[in-house]
Image (cartoon, rainbow, N blue to C red; front, side, top):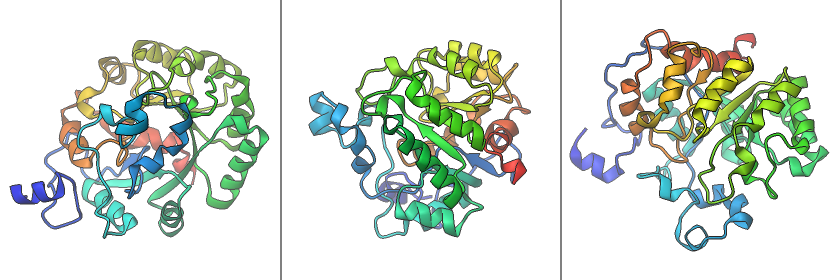
Length: 314
């Protein structure tokens, strides 16, 4: 790929013949990666975070940042080449990098089109706010019956008002997920946006896993700075998992890599974070350097997600 092309595209894959080639990888060729945090490129990233506006109080978040976690990421993927169809762009990117299936949101017209037209490539998830009470539960059932909902996305610090992970307002949601065998992908640890963190402390998962032993919970966004506690809880609770969303591979926590290489090979799940924070060029240039053992790679990139999302029962 020419330097001119890199500069013209901002280092981002654009579906052209000059796109970034893949080198040798430590995982098997043709594995068919499952990305548990992917989405179609969007024209205006700020709209993705509009729901957080009532909670943001600092001047940068309110007036300067294009989106609330801008301070954390460099070279965030911008609008997907506005002249291109976002679905076509996503499919080309997935093909190029060996992404067989991706878990995406289901709220926009483009997302629903992707799920409808390519059900073998895109799996529907949805965010939920337990402050809505039984309306939240009804929306889960409706999505399950109409689009085949595969997972729930929970962002306790993003709810308005915030709802701690172990708050009883979540319990009807957790119960319905148990009934439908839907995993909850839960943001855990210090949130990126400048909002309070207490509701996302890792320790809150302990009571939830105890009270709902049938519930499958996948931690999202790092569990920082409590990664070691996250490992301890995964050892304790069989249905608790960890995904690598929002982390460039070179920043995967050491505690998580060590756990995957010892007792936790079945508990760590790949998540990319395109286009919300990372380009796939960066992900795939750094990923081969992660110090996973050979037998961990297929589980991390595919097998664990297939099992947790119930794709092996389809």
